Amino acid sequence: MTSLTSWWTGWMTAVLGLVLGAAAIAVIPAERFFHRPAPAAAGEGGRWACPMMDFIGTRAGTCPVCGMDLGLVTAGELSREQRRRMGVEVATISEGPATATIHAAGSADFDHRSTRIVIPRIAGRILQRHPATFGCCQEVAEGEAIIDIYSPEAYQAQVELKAAIDLGDARLVQSLMDRFARWNLTPVAEAIRAGGAPTDTVTITAPFGGQAQLAASMMADETLMVGKLISADTPLLRLVHPDLLTLIIHVPEHQARFLAEGQPVEITSDDGGPLPGLAATVARVAIEINPETRTVEVRVHLRGARNVLRPGSLVMARIRAALGPDLKPADPGSPSTWGSFPLIPASAVLSTGVRHVAWKLESTGADGRQTFVPVSLALGQRLEDAEGRDQFVVRAGLKAGDQVAVQGAFLIDSQAQLAGTPSLLFPTGAAAAPGHSHAP
Image 1 (cartoon, helix red, strand yellow):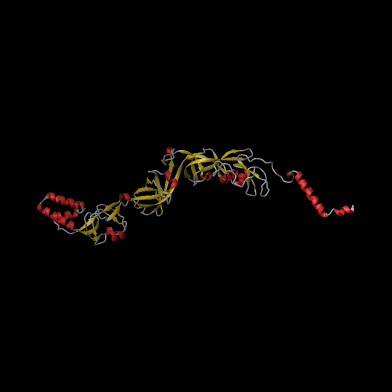
Image 2 (cartoon, one colour):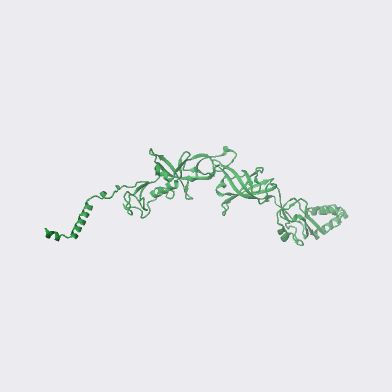
């Protein structure tokens, strides 16, 4: 016995223990050591994900990285606790008119449709400028003196007129009088008929009244410099009607489809505040969009604004608008012309810029579990209600009474992408990312 004990050394005991342990591990089922759920396919609408690592699989099991059990992720199915943690809120699709209040900024300018140009109609050299030619926005009355010119042509015509009068040639006198009328120099001809002497200096007057539009520096340096020789068609002044203004308003691109000629406009100015006394309507809506500001130019013509607005004043325009059943501008003052559409809160819409999706509440179980499904949308105009909330007109995809997620929709969509089911970015579903799935 002693010889056997001496022969059986400690290292032999260690080897025997390892052999017996390996045999036990091979014989005893793995479930006795690790809790492993029975393998099962995720099925449509689900993936198995590790709660710790970045791993997504197609069947149950454990994470090959950390060994944790994989959890089933099913798109759109949320328990009460999940909805609370994700902050999911649901709203009902309403139905109503597509009305909007457009707020846009712009500035006032003269109504250049009334612009008329004063020309001398006869050549000469400038001898003197009168006050009408000094200063921008100088008001000029009809018949007011503009410049004095030295004109040999006018002098010669006066001499001929005097001779015709002395000869008693009525036809020639009338012909010469008509020439002076075309030159706007009838007072000069009348002076000759009254017995006056011919003169080589005549005064050019304004044939109509208005407000000057050329700056004094431009007129003095380029057109009306004393001593300068001018031709018969040289522009002397540009005059506009002082009581007519045009407001140039810039409306954001997405609101331009609400606009039509004749819509009333409420005007507010920085220096005058609200101006309810001005009768303003949309006169013109530009066809083109400014590519730099992404706005559409709207023109509003005003009459009687002389003592209320100044050219150059900053203005704010408030335009009430509505859409008809054909999604074209309707009369905002006549509700019978308005259309009625499903309206969805803007916060419920997920968009790529091309594709629009909302997550619709499909069902609610007895245990409070809710199921959401993605719905592709065809949207119309974007609206802003009286409380400043954004809405979209729904042309297709949802109807009044449907319920959609307005908060947490992005998280629901992210869950669908994780599960590989249809989502905003993947209309037909997305397979698990390469390298992120178990081998079958």
